[in-house]
Image 1 (spheres, rainbow, N blue to C red):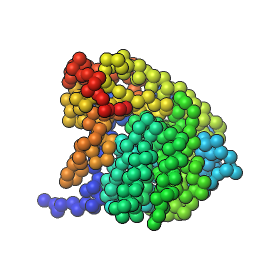
Image 2 (cartoon, protein in one colour; image 1 turned 30 degrees about the vertical axis):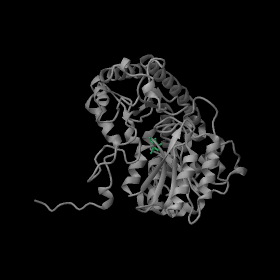
Image 3 (cartoon, rainbow, N blue to C red; image 1 turned 120 degrees about the vertical axis):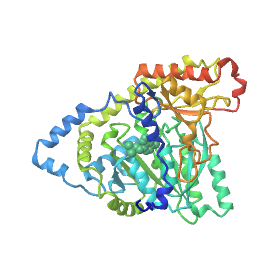
Image 4 (cartoon, rainbow, N blue to C red; image 1 turned 180 degrees about the horizontal axis):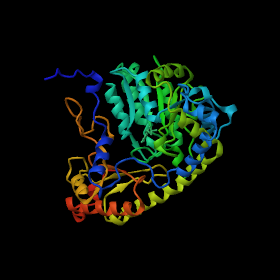
Length: 449
Ligand SMILES: Cc1ncc(COP(=O)(O)O)c(C=O)c1O
């Protein structure tokens, strides 16, 4: 018998990513309608646009060689120029107002690589990161793997509750733990998983809090704006980054995955200037540059206006899908009769369900199993709370206190008829575990969506 493998501490701290489990469910059962995986709408993927640009790129020797050769660690400079202008345009700013420039932008292999590298760059085991509760569970995976203490702040319809954040920071200060607080992580537009958006006034408060509590070291805000460009209702709100006039406190993470195509796996981040060099040293070790070819493709898509046009088209597509899902939910669970509650996102791809307390929705629950038997799958809310993930993590699995009667639905990938059918299946599953007449709206008091 061969000698046992000796894995790193970090490997032992790294759980099976929850998303792999949900992907497998779909592969194992082709009749299953998955509203679990956060995949984008497949029909609208930009095949024509990408084909045209790739043909153009490969038609000439110089452009072919430029795109097929290694690029730079930081990313293709013309693309970074366009990204700079793009972010300023989103925030209604001109280059004169800009607190950062193209050299403060790093192009990465998806925003996921950016999030991961920031973890390596900024965090030591035992450091504290504050997230929203609930929050993006793949990011929690990174934090767990790095041995980070993750604390969380509740949300309401205006996003992260900044009062609760202020209280938490005050408590940490009294306990002498403020020096360990490194990052506050927010998915501030149409959050994954709830679909909620951080309000304008809270954006300013969030930055003020980070500044006020930066006593022995800078507390950074990691603003993950992955879904920002998928707004289909209401007015846009400026980024937290746009209030960071000295480019000191806010790291902005963006991606082409949601507004264009995840297959290109290209993201980008804006960093305070003194973080750029250290990040590039890490990226040099990771891959010394993300796919140069993809960056040339993206540069041309941005230059021709095809990117902006595509994102515009997507907004209408996701709006229609949200409407289909919400009306199917309302049909299956009429608000006057049913205590099930859900969020109404103004963009992005997620709706958050809150069942009444007597309906457990976790991965071991009767409801989850009944839904699978009926042929639909959702993400149990417990995955989206720190320390609540039920998947095995080395020696011991986490606690499971939160999110037990909550669920995330993604309307990105399913077609309209599948969204309607998935809600009929969920309706049957709910009725199987608890007939509606047994649930009173009074029982539901205390839960809010
Ligand atoms: C909030 C959030 N951040 C980051 C990512 C990572 O996306 P990518 O690496 O494809 O840019 C995702 C993907 O679902 C996400 O939902």
